[in-house]
Length: 114
Length: 124
Image 1: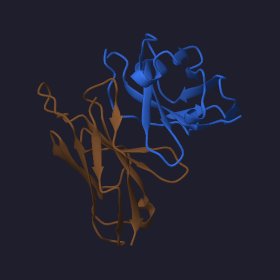
Image 2: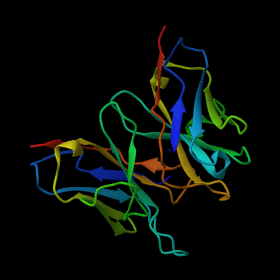
Image 3: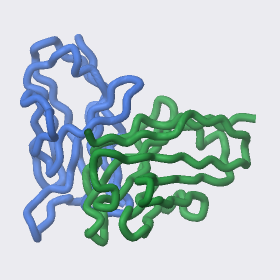
Image 4: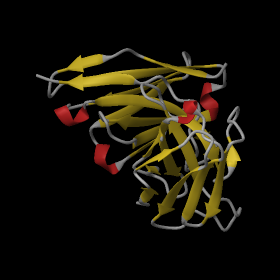
C-alpha cells in the first residue's frame, strides 16, 4: 500500500498570509501513460464531510476559490492557500488514487488562525 | 443538484451488525463507483471499499475483507454498506462518496460529492 505522509500535523497562519501544506507518498503516483499525478486534496470543517478541493494534483474542483492551488509531481506535493481567510480553518487531507485498492489518505493537517 | 443522502445515526451492541444506506440524486447513479470511508472520533479518513454501481463488483480494504458487504439497488439509486461483528473500534462516522467512472475496471478516483455521514456508536 502507498503511505501518504503530510506535514506539518498542524499549523497556525495569520489572516491574509500564505499557508502551505505538504504531502509525500511512499511511491510515485505519476502515471507514465497519461503523465497525470493521481493525487487529490480535501478540506474538512468541523462536523462536516470532506470536500474536494484539488484533483490530478493541480486541478481545482468545481466552485473552489482560486486562492487554493496544488502543485508537485511524483512523490512530493503541496497545497497552498495564497491568502488565508477565516473560513479556511479546517483539516486538510491528501489522497492517492494511483495504486488502488486501497486508496490511501494522509493523516491530515489542522489549519488554524494565528 | 448532485447529492448523497445517508441514513441516520445508529447505536449497536458489540457483536451486532449495522447497515448504512446512501441515496444518490442529481446524476446517473450507475455511471460511477460508490466509495465508503470511515472516520473514528478525532481521527483521519480510512478507505473501506467501493462498489461499481453498474456491475455490482466490489473491492474491499484487506482490513475489512469478510466483515463488510457493499451492495446497491439501481432501481432506487441507493448503495448500502453492512458491517458485521461490530466492536467498539468500529465506532465512527461512515461516509459514502461518489468516485470514479464505472466503466473503469480499477475505480481509483477523487471523491465528490460526499454524503453527510452516518454516526455509528458501538457500546454495551
